[in-house]
Length: 101
Image (cartoon, rainbow, N blue to C red):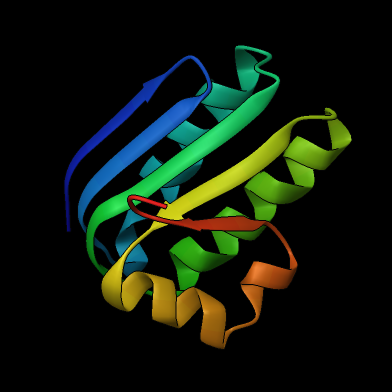
């Protein structure tokens, strides 16, 4: 369950756990951020404790939309979320940056 989701400018910051039912809220936040026409979209998942496959699919959707709009996309991660995304080889799709790195 998402505790908080903020979308401002080219940044989306999520805290809590991204469960299967959270995909619509995440998609709306990402679309809002992309709608502001940023040069770079930063998705900050450092406050996320768990990640379901549906929100992962929404991250991939956001990457496709970012590419269409010529927007660079970066996902900031830590801990288990970083491990999940790297194990899924998504570091080969969009830029993953470890928190503090």
